[in-house]
Amino acid sequence: MVSCGDMNPFDAELQRRLEALREQGLRRELRRVDSPAATRITIDGRTHLNFSSNDYLGLANHPALKEAAIRAVEQFGAGAGASRLISGSLAPFHELEETLAAFKGTEAALTFSTGYAAALGTLTALVGKEDILILDKLVHACIVDGARLCGATLRIYRHNDLNDLEEKLKWATKNRPQATSRILIVTESVFSMDGDAAPLRDLVALKERYGAWLMVDEAHATGLYGPRRRGLADTLGVSGRIEIQMGTLGKALGASGGYICGSRALVDLLINQARSFIFSTAPVPAAAAAATAAIHLVQSDTGRELQERLWARVAEFSAAAPPLSPAPPSMILPIVYGDETRALQAADTLRGQHLYVTAIRYPSVARGAARLRVTLTAAHTPDDVVKLVAALNLLTP
Ligand SMILES: *Cc1c(COP(=O)(O)O)cnc(C)c1O
Picture: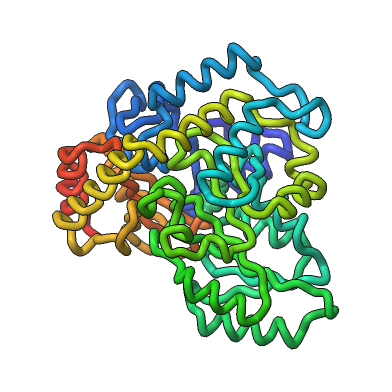
């Protein structure tokens, strides 16, 4: 390693910051994978069993998605060339949005380059300085960042706590800067780092009582929940009462991109005012084509079989490791250590046995809430789950 003395002042300063992160157990680094991102991944020439992917149905390497992507490259090229409003909007994006709206049962849909961009663009388009934004304490960083960027007054309610949310709604109703000020509540349906679910039915009833709008991020539910696999809101029968349904095409749908589903007016407004949509080059057509194929697949018998397989793996895990059981039904299984360094050591121990489980630390979760975040997928075998449980049982929690 180069010592700080040999560095220019800029790099020396950054090196000091990186060292501070390392001392707190918060330094992150990239680990190169020389294989497809699947349940078995190659790191340093060794095969590891991967329990950290959000590719919950194993679609990222499904032949139907790969074929759709290859066909789109051949037909539409490798890149889109410009923003969709500048040089015309390629057909694969329209096919995807029509497929997505039909799948979600909404009037319309709009896709973004990522879920992160969808959150940022949507929040800044819908609310501003005169409005009030109320967030669940555990919402994803993209919602927190969008909330900061949009300039609305921000209130945070305790995680999944409807009483606290009602307090915030009462406060917001009394403290609207103007009569026209809007109140927008944002939650996830299944939470990314804890795997628990929001009480969506009660939340919808509450927001209606206060005349607030609701945005629900289904990043970890779309494709997975309910007889139609549309997500948790549909499963609970409330999707028609949620103004803004958000999600990603990069997790259970195995492709890449973010989406907003809702009314035609919502989508038209976003096309006009979501800056992350307007001022960004359209994604590669192959990503849209792969996502479209994924949505068709999810709705088919294959989708049902993959869903059943995923929940079978979760049930096997719960039966074998009851103290670690997830908030059912979820494929996200957090094993909370608290201390950052101890979570890192646990991940290192597992990696020594060629099991890849990432230690999740601040700022992905709160300081002192570090954890192993195990995720199961439909592509895992029963034997994979047995191996994982055996290794977890040997860790000192
Ligand atoms: C991953 C994630 C996003 C961002 O989606 P990307 O497509 O990965 O940018 C948004 N919300 C939640 C809850 C997520 O977990």
